[in-house]
Length: 430
Picture 1 (spheres, one colour):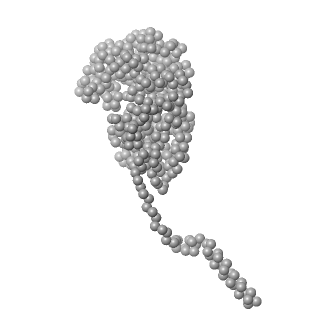
Picture 2 (tube, helix red, strand yellow; picture 1 turned 180 degrees about the vertical axis):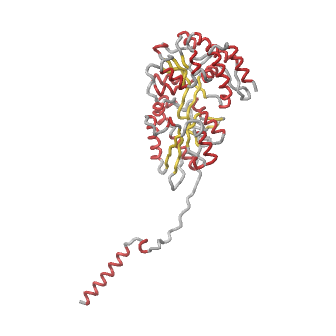
Picture 3 (cartoon, helix red, strand yellow; picture 1 turned 135 degrees about the vertical axis):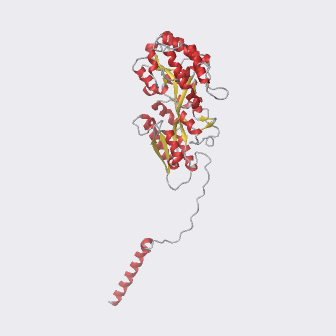
């Protein structure tokens, strides 16, 4: 019996020791101390040489993307769904990177440029990594130092696949500040059933006598026609200027168009492009001088888009658009932001997105990928004649002068020569 008890006690002690060896270290050492580990190796940080190199980070890298409402990926449109899928794909291909979207109004207080300036001055941590900017806002943002040039990331600039007008959209004072992703151009939209074959000249349109709508209470149409007639808007010192001969040619067209009913008096009540397009859709006019995005968004089945006929020489029009700009103040995170902007500007993505969103292609390969051959050919002609708008200060000086003179001629309150002469002299006054 004693021998049996001895073996039992020895067995129980062995079982207890074996069980203790399998318990976690924290349970056996309630203080929480652990065996002293080997000293950690300090990570080596190097500056990323290009936008394809990912900065080392232990926490998720967050890139904030600011967009105007029309590009909101939460919209229930095919273009929004494509953008949302593209952002998800970027995060999937870049583990540890999170893209957060913030929607801001396009302009004015609280808009993209206004918010960017406010954040840069008062809350640098709230500055976005990537922001979508119009050409006018890109110019202001670059001159105010709110965004970073992309010359280091793209030392050769944008290659030849980028269309000429698009390369100009992203360039400020010969430096690259944005990657163009959406284009827009001023064009003629008309109904072939009413106007017939494609017009070859303004005289051709005047003979047909059908009403053509444009914002007669604005300077844009006059500026397009004036530049197409060979007029200059800046002198040798870069100051705003107007030339009487070219301006007289435009105002003579207005006077003759008014006499033939092509430019009815009611065009002077139209102040915005939105009003022009609505007038066209309501069939008050059979043609309209408008931005291409209106036509490409609606694609009315009874209308076609065509380059604006030239007044003198080759066709000419003005282009606008949107670019991705980089504003992230953190150098390492800025590399990721630049990569995101480039990812959202590839031909692969833009080939489908521009068609769905109703914007002009910014790359030749994107234009060639458009499905409708007739539309592609028409847009090619428009794009070849497209030039970006003059600098903001020049536009600010020209707009009121040209708008007033245009109104005077269309309302037949003065003759073309007097209007052109007065506009030139008004701009010369200090």
